[in-house]
Length: 357
Image (cartoon, rainbow, N blue to C red; front, side, top):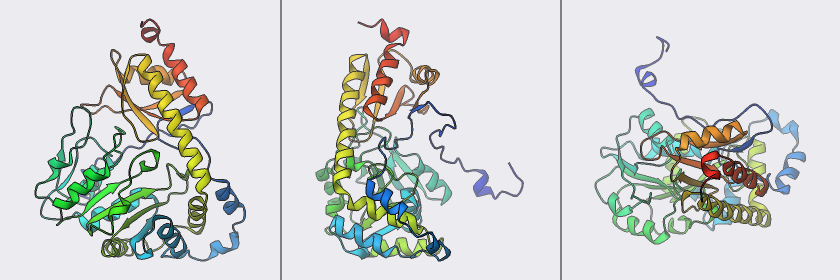
């Protein structure tokens, strides 16, 4: 710890990302990356990119990408905002909307970056407990607040809210911004994008990292009322006016334009998720119903940390969280069918699982 650090930085607890191993021959089911490569149209966009253009700055407004997003989601281009991954979009949104007198409300168990942003920006916040089944009950959020944020589907649980439940909250919570973080929405949940023209205080944030297989490109976006988008632009242009490079913009546009590939690969992941859920339940796991590209599971008898360690000795990585309430759960990314079969076969070799009836 350096004497030159400010007090604010000294007291921070940064977000800890999932491990990115430097070795090969690993089945990597710990960071919710897409097991399938990007669309062939993305590959074409990369190969046809004119590198001489890199001597110039990219379009600071990402106009072509915003127009593509607006057309795809049936909104206006001034209702779209793009950033360097959805984490940057979230960071700008916390700065733009949540530094209020009343506390920000969020679930007790959710994306842990939310707490980090609150501490970084000195935002007061309160955690709202989940149900015993890890569900989010939005009626518990009907109290004075300086904003509301939740992931839908939630992470790391995978549970999803209905569109009716979200609209019910918006009908009663009209004086603060509600952010719906939809990083995983394309794997079976209902998007709230259809509500942004009806409710001026909802902001929907999505990413190209999961269903579009562009985690390495870092492209995220928000959709909402034009005045909310203007607030995000004010923060962006006070921080980094050129967040998305030229190649990232081109590949994101190409990914959006290949609907067939998008539908085929997401359906393959959904099918593998359902197969994995059934297999886990057959060997003693309880699995939270998931609408994501991962499952959240706990064994009836065996600790999560032990199972993670056992899998690691067989070159399979999964995510384990030590925080109270989920310390025995594993978050398991859905990989290819071959990877999921290898994962299940490995678990069946655990001595305490192989002897179960």
